[in-house]
Amino acid sequence: MLPLVLFAHVFGPLLAQHPARAPRPGSVAGLVLGSSLALATTGCGRKAEAQWIPDDAAVVRCTVSGPNLQLPHLVDELATPLPPTGLLARKMDPIALDELGYERDRIVCATMQTPSAEELERASAAIEELSELRKTIKPTVRNLGRCRCTYAEAIDAKGLISGCRDTPTDESCEPEAEQVEALQEALAPLRAKLETTEVPRIHWRMVGRSDRLGRFAARRDELIARHPGGSEVYVPGNPLPPRYGAKLIAAMLSEDHVVAVVSQDSGQGLLVVREIGSLLVLDHFSHPDWGGHARADEYILLTMMEDAQIERYRAALDAPTSARALQLEPRDGYLIEVDRDALERVDRAAEISTNFVARNYDPAREQRVLPPLLTDRVTLQVPFGTEGTTLRARYRLTKEGRKWTEFAAGAPLVETLADLGEPDVIPRFVAARGRAGGLFQLRGTATERLLFAGLTGLPKVLLAIEAANPGSIEGDFNDWQVALPSGPLPGELKSRDGVRELRERLSIDPHTLSGGLSKDGGYVDVELARR
Image: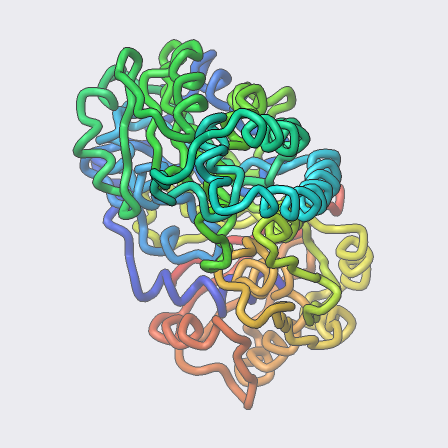
């Protein structure tokens, strides 16, 4: 029941304000798209694509490729994490996907990969050890005097010493053998540690069928213009510049099926493009947004670490061992699925990564207030051919969420609203170090406030609607319908952060919200449609 209000007062306004330029229901274009998708996504081809969606993905976004389709504004504005511009697909709009070479009228999915708990534990310990090791080595290096950068250059170690990477060679210094050997010995533990210290990264993958293989390499200059941070494209056979990061690029280019590797943002992002059979697979790697806290020396050290961890990147290119069973069918419409526990791990990885740049984010000092969490996975879908006027969702209930629905079993919904009401705790987040910026994908974001923490305060919204318009709510929890009037909400109900503008848009047109509880009690299904 509460999910219906979430749609009506959070996402519904978008429907009223921004109808999508997708095929109209019943139109020739709509019928052709529906028929094409039904045919194109059946059989072994669809299975091959689905196998690339990992079971533990934090975010899954699926859309369709096509030169004459436009992503509905509703999908574009939902409160969910977006793929990086480095994937070169804009926001996964159909035209951008078509220009990348994905087959028209076929589904393309992008996923945010989730680090394992073991990987996070290993990274946390290794980064701490690396920090201590650097502190230990620093006095020894400093004692080598002003010519230490010259000694470092002799053993290709300027990137390991703070301030040396961009320091011109001092002509008055000579690479004395004894001093160079002393530096080599001092840096040996650090070099070894670089091979095992894994700084968490953000990994997105996009996969779909292509009928124009070779298009990326042929149109690479046009495609990379979509990323504002700067890009350098390398294809097999190209010479590589003599700089840090080149070893990793060379290794990726030597992998099977790789047709291009794109270095982005001065080496801080990496895009690996593969053509595997009929599939076009793009893997994008980057590090969390540290808000300008990382120094140039740290970025250099990070690049050297990646050169020393080629096997880690090779392993990341593998297909998942366990594929995701999505809660809704991608061929039915534009789809976004988000998993709370996986996003928590992604945020934990970002938190750990700050220790590498000496920012040391301490979660114990942040303020994070949340109501009871009733759902841990949410799937949103705008059906094809509805012009963005319909939104469907499936909420997977937590154990606490299942207990919550027991209050409503068998009774008319309107009579159970008071029992369903939870304390209206307003979600609140204050980062440990001022503004967290873009560090987190979940904490303090609209995804957390509206999708996962937006259910508990909504019964009183429905009660207010029913009080102002008796008879608006019909049915019981298993099969219900709510008539949502246009105009402002009755009473003095306050909007949570991020909701006010959307709720104002909803006031333009009346909507109907319907849905129910699954037979096993594990899901709440909802559909919102403009009347």
